[in-house]
Amino acid sequence: MTLSNLDRPVQFLKGVGPKRADALARMGIGTARDLVYHIPRRYDDASTITPMLT
Image 1 (cartoon, one colour):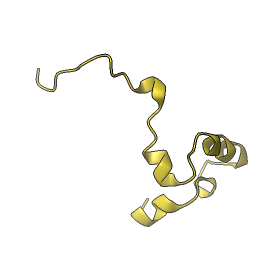
Image 2: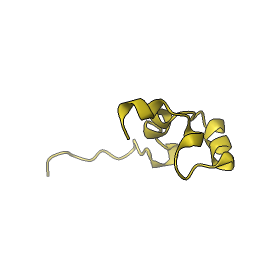
Image 3: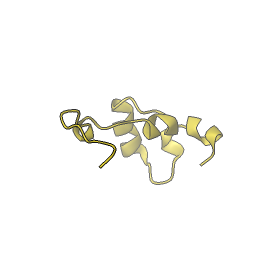
Image 4: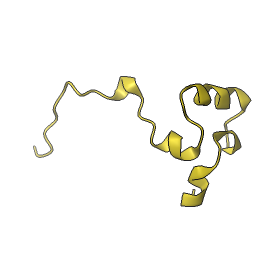
């Protein structure tokens, strides 16, 4: 995927049909760029601090 493809609407991505495009639109995801930068809430755990060096 090139940078110019990131602005493509999600309904034109491989594997995204009308139902999935509607579900993504309800989540505020309209382009491939939106999809790449989407961070699911349930996977963002800010309660645990992990040290970078061990």
